[in-house]
Amino acid sequence: MGKVIGIDLGTTNSLVAWMTPQGPQIVPDNEGRALLPSCVAFDEQGKPQVGRLARQGAVAGPERTFFSFKRFMGRGLTEFAGELGYMPYPIEGDERTVRFPAGSKEYSPVQLSAMVLATLKRRAERYLGEFILNEAVITVPAYFNDAQRQATKDAGEMAGLDVLRILNEPTAAALAYGLDQRKTGTIAVYDLGGGTFDVSVLRLEGGVFQVLATAGDNQLGGDNIDDLLTAALLSETPELIQDRNWLNQVRNLAEAAKKDLSTQETVRVILDLPTGPLDRTIRREDFETLITPLVERTLKPCTQALQDAGLTPGDIDEVVLVGGSTRIPLVKRRVAELFGRTPHDELNPDEVVALGAAVQADVLAGGTRDVLLLDVTPLSLGIETLGGVMARLIDRNSTIPCQARETFTTAVDGQTGIEVHVLQGERELAQDNRSLERFTLKGFPPMPAGLPKVEVTFLIDANGILNVTAHELRSGVETTVEVRPSYGVVDAQVEQMLEDAFIHGEEDLQQRQRIEAQVEADRRLPKAEELLVEMQSQVPEADLIPFSTALTELQTSYAGGNYKAINAALEALEAAAQPLVELRMNQSVQQALQNTKLDEVLAKVEQARREGL
Ligand code: ADP
Ligand code: MG
Image (cartoon, rainbow, N blue to C red):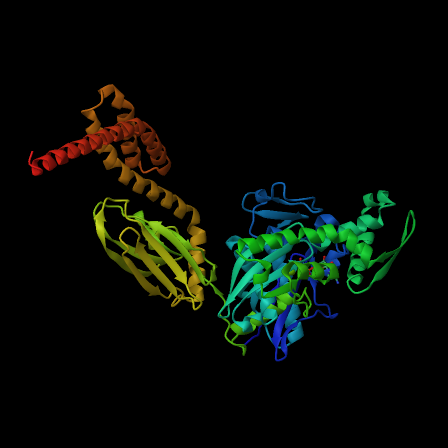
């Protein structure tokens, strides 16, 4: 039996932690260091080196030293148009991938992340001795979408880890502070790291965290502060900026000075530059003036996140500081001022996410901490719609509790009930997914097809129990059933289902599009045929030609089964029908008008008769 480890896979630095009887603890490397720079460099032989030496440029030149690859996880290169500033290493890719060429090979962000994870795994195994550690919790930013989370999980598996849970970084930070113990509350997590800034607003209810809002700036962090200080130090010898070697040295000094200024009032920077000796004393006060604009830039996303969550600073019960850059006193002060309360800074801000991951890991390993209800849905949930297609209401990996609602209608005139078929899985077609439940909402009055409004609500409560409610809005008829979605689906099955979805993705999608086109044609063809017959008696034949041609076109493509042709024909038919529909509408309006007139007249006649005229 092994321990479960918690890993913070950071943009700048990564860490691994585990649970001890004294609480969660960071696992240090051989030299006692906690942070592993998330940096991979490939030497002449193409051998990867991970961490500090790679970061310091000791392994290879900048074109083979990769960092900040977390930004690319689960994304395609084309998504970055314009957003990507200058990067010292080559990047290739397309809409779906990003690749880093190094020598004769290419690496994906997932592979590079896997190297970082494998290094942490080995570190933990060495430190903890007897165990083979293969189960882990890995954290990701709260805004990570499904693809980014999946990519992180893939990286873990590539590193030989069994990823038990992908956990949100802000939630991990809150766990590290034991905030789950307070059961309810609203928490703001301010995370200023090396290259990114994130703020999240969490709602804690009954021990369950829910992300209410996230905001941030993915181009703002400690690196920008280093840039500023470097520029200030080189302000009198700007020609040195061209020399990468000197620039690097000054940058390293600047970062060290910045860190010292978090605890000291002044620092002295000394370096023998080719242009003469550099010797500057920097006072904290001046440093603060320098970086004030950067710190101010973090406040707007905070306000934004509060606004998105529908809250004001006064609604926040706890503020948590995360990220190495929150060690800066000015940052702490400004955050305290904005939220009107002292933020938590008792733990090391660059360790708190990993510590929280260890807390979650311990819970999953069956540890002693009060059961913590913190979960995500392992597979998507939805219902079957026309043509056997699955309409997804809740996406896989959504944090629970969660709720989703969508409105459906009937396909046949006079229908007084609707069958709700609840499904779980990632495939496009209902038959390929797992059927969880079927029930019928019945007893609403007969109406023409398309008129009933059946609102289906999925609610997953904190225990992972799904409640499905179907509610016909016009009549008020409602039915609720309780479903247990993950019950009975073991991990291997989840994996199999995901794999199937992955393998069949393309063909599923085509099949879905074909079915959707056919369902639409099924619906429209009889109506169009009816319209044609009706109009034949009212419109000169020549005027009907465009419409009848379009109709024939649809009939032919429908028989052919090509969804693109069907969709094109549907569109053409719609355009050709427009004038006829308008004509019919005008006629029926007139008829209706005439009818009311008739009724009015009739009523008057009747009244007159009663009055005895
Ligand atoms: P990430 O979450 O992006 O991986 P970290 O949370 O490890 O990053 O933060 C790294 C950043 O924190 C770097 O820019 C580093 O210079 C900065 N940092 C670390 N310690 C201090 C300190 N004492 N004072 C100011 N900044 C610091
Ligand atoms: Mg971080």
